[in-house]
Length: 392
Image (tube, rainbow, N blue to C red; front, side, top):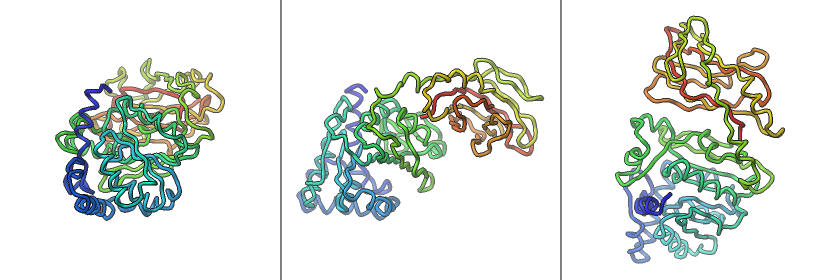
C-alpha cells in the first residue's frame, strides 16, 4: 500500500465508535484534549457501553482464556477490548496505524495503573511487526483487517502470524457476505461508506474460506465460526495447528498455491441439459436433485500428485452465479456415493458466489456435481471458475 493511500486510512481511523456502532463516533484527538478526569470518565462510559451491548459475550468467553497470556491486537482503536482483558490478567500489545489512538490507550492504562501490562506498536508504512516478540498466545483482530483490500490484509496477517506461538489462537471479527448482499452488494470501495461512514475508504466481506486463503499456507483448525447481531458481524476463533513458529519460507508456497483449472473444456452435461461454454448458462433438468453437470476430478488430482505426502487434502474453489432457482455443488466419492455433508447450495441472485469444497483427498478420484435443488421447475446457473488446489 502506498504511503499516500495509507495516509487516507490513518485519517479515517483516528475516529472510532463511542462503544457501539449506534452511539456515533469520536476522534482520538478530541479525547486527548480533555483533562484527565473528564478524559477517563468519558472513555470509561464508552467502554461500559461496549461491554454491556452486543459484544458483552466476549468477556464471558475469553477472560479465563487470556488470563496470564500474551495477546497482540491488530487495529486496537481506542483500546476497549485490550484494557478490559488487561484488568482480568492479560498482557496486551496494542497495534494501530494511528498514533493518537495509541496515545489514548497509553493514557488510559497509566491512569488506571495497569501500564506495566500494556505494550504499544505503531504500524508504519512498511506494515511490519518485526519489532514484536515471537511468543504471543493469541492474535486479536477485531473489525479492522476487513477495512483494507485482501492482498494488503494478507501481507499484514502473515507478518503478524509469525509472532504467534504454535497452538496459539487467531481471533477475528468481520462483516459477513450476508450483510454485504443485504446492503446492495456495492463495490468494496463504496461499501465502507455504508458500514462505517462517508470517510471510510474500504470494507470487504469475509467468510471462513476467505480468512483461510488470507492466511495460506498456515494450517488452521476452526474453534468457532458464527454470525450474530442480525448477520451484521461474523466471529472466527482459529487455532494455529502447527508444532513450530510460522514462517512462509518453510512452505513451498509455489506448490501450495498451485491451481488446476477444471474447466479447460466444457463439463460433461447430464442428459437434457443444454451444452454451453464456460460462463454461459446451464439449465438443470427439472426435478429435485437432478444432475445438471459433472466434472471428473481424477486427472486434476493426478496433476497434484507431486504434492508432499503430508499435504492435508485438496480444496475446490468454485465461482458460480445462479440466475434462476437454486443449485447444489457437491461431490461423489470414488465408490460412486454422493457426499451430502460436502454439498453447498447457491441460490438465485444477481451476484456470483465463491464457495470452497474440502472433502477430496489428493490422489482419490472423485466427481464434482452440480444438481437442481428446486423440486418444482428448473434452475439455471453459470460456472465462472472451477479450480482445484492443495488445501491449507
